[in-house]
Structure formats: structure tokens, C-alpha cells
Length: 115
Length: 112
Image 1 (cartoon, rainbow over the protein chains, first blue to last red):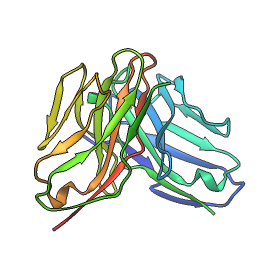
Image 2 (image 1 turned 120 degrees about the horizontal axis):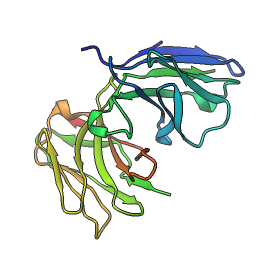
Image 3 (image 1 turned 45 degrees about the vertical axis):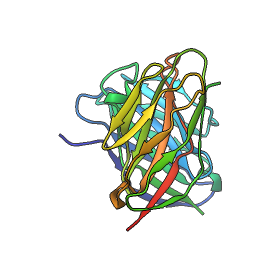
């Protein structure tokens, strides 16, 4: 079956702009988590959605937001982009909550570069 | 709060060398511990796990033992291959809020 897909794979934006990233989970998976990966900080949890509701949120400013649709697809939005937002954004899906790492599958990520 | 500390990379080894990537954690209670691997251009994959003290996780020749007394979960492999070149992440799930806490990752380069 198809894996987790993320679009776009690469993105270049300018400071001050906003960006929307998309994640389509594996069919049948209802939980979607988002992570930010940077060389300095490693992998940091952004938020988790299940059945269109945000279940958990990491320590990121309000410029970072997300949502989940009825078909489980999820989007995350970053407004007023800063240079430090340049990162690989990973999405992971799982069938249910609580998240079981055995059943959590990651997408390839969206590489965001802010100039 | 819960945290994971792993050795900084990059780690460069020759093929067939012995590998150790150190990982220590801080957590209340009894977390589950994991190693993930990220191959170039791909997302993370769960490599192995251990859910209680003295458990040994193993997969693809990699092993890690949950050591509660030293709060460690070091990743080892007896003979690495070029195809093992990747970024390795140590992680824990404290089970209190379902979040998985990751270390910063260690990039591994294996030379032929």
C-alpha cells in the first residue's frame, strides 16, 4: 500500500512569507504527527492530530499551526517565515492513538528553505 | 522534562568495523526506548526498540540494551556495511503524553 506522502518535497520561500505543507497519511491511518528536523536541534515535535482534533502540541510559537481534514489528510502552516524556520518537516501517520512507534510511518519530508 | 542525548557525529568508519553510538536519556518512570534510522532522502524508520529494563532490541545486525542503572541505550553493530550509512536517532516514549522525544541524531559514514 502507498506510504505517507508529503507535498511539496522542496520549497524555497522568502522571510515574512507564509507556507503550507501537506501530508497524506497511509490509507486507514487517522493520526498524523508533524516534526521539524534541523542539524542543530535534531527532530522536534510540532503537533499531532487525530480525527481532526489536535491532541498534542510541541513548544513552537503560534506562527506554526496545523489542521486535519475529514479524510485524515493534514496541513501545517507557518506564517511570517524566519530564516530559522529552514528545516526538513516530517510527517508521520499511525492508525490510532496513543501513537505506537511500531505502527508509526514517516514520510520523506518537505525541505523548506527560507531566504 | 524527558530528554535524549546522543553522541554527536559525523561518525566515520571503515567497512566491517565495530560500531557504537552512545545514547543516554532522562525520564521519570519507565519509558520505552527506540532507535530510528533515516537513509538519504527518506523518512525515519523504526530500527529497534526495548520497552523495559534489560530488554535487548535487535534488527538488521544492530543491537541495543535498555540499561536502567546507567539510563543508556547504546546502539551497536559488529560489522558495518556501506549501506548502513545514514542518520541514526535515539528516542524515548515516556507514555505520559504519547509524545516521542528524539535525540539530535548521529550521522554515520561507512567507507568501502
